[in-house]
Image (tube, rainbow, N blue to C red; front, side, top):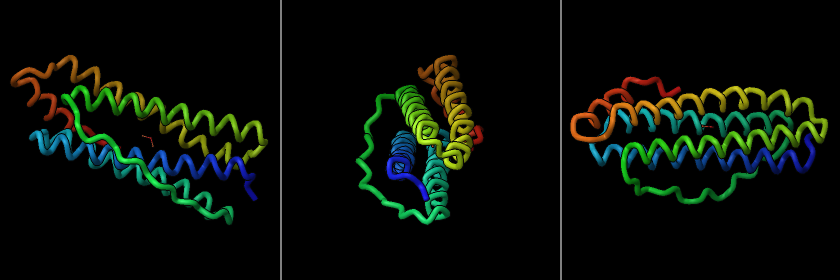
Length: 164
Ligand code: FEO
């Protein structure tokens, strides 16, 4: 049986992963409406990963006979200044998710909840990969530039990336 504080923090994390999924869908849609199909596709696929992150948490709660409490998800922003703005925001968002996962891991250590601590290690590794992925994209967009043809090449590059 999980402890009350751990259950609450896991449910909060589910909401954060679902928000990330909606945020990336919103960004994906902005990209498509601005004719950036490569970036739109990448973000659409990555939104699916975020939804899977939420479901993995739900599965863990279900396996421990704990009720999942789905929360209201706040509306994500849908106006962006540029492709670089979109991806700088994805990177900033991933940093927030990492901080949240780290706080969750700290809580399980303080509560001596070894099972949840062990379960969360998958998220620790995943956040390392996601930070590297989004930081790399921001660096690449800066390198390619956003003026004229460069935007086209930046979008082509994003369309060629594996979102997972
Ligand atoms: Fe679920 Fe992108 O972290």
